Length: 120
Image 1 (cartoon, rainbow, N blue to C red):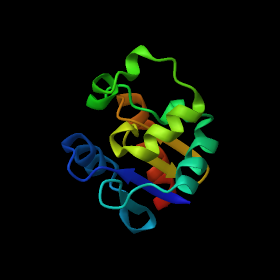
Image 2 (cartoon, one colour):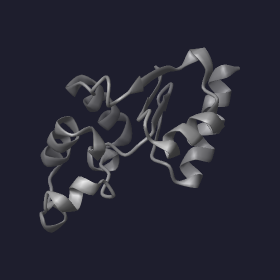
Image 3 (cartoon, rainbow, N blue to C red):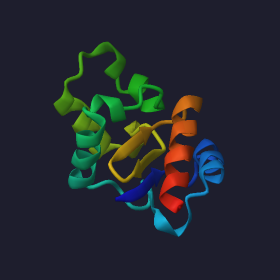
């Protein structure tokens, strides 16, 4: 599968997509207008190794909801990501069986190489 989960209204996501130049071989999903399904999140967690790896602690609601003061479990991470799209660390790039999560420079660089290899 070649897919990118992103937020169309996020300038950082749009900048990264511009760098990646995914082209038609990648399906794009704006998680605000087309929310994640449980099956999609479960598949991502399978590739990532955990739901925690997909969870964004910099989301404004993380502190607003008092989550910073709680000990969250994998079940909690899954629930919160499904309940509120802002808790998904973005973008999430799936290239074949590889997953790249977030906007750290090393992650984006690795995702760019993976996207290029898919494009041929």
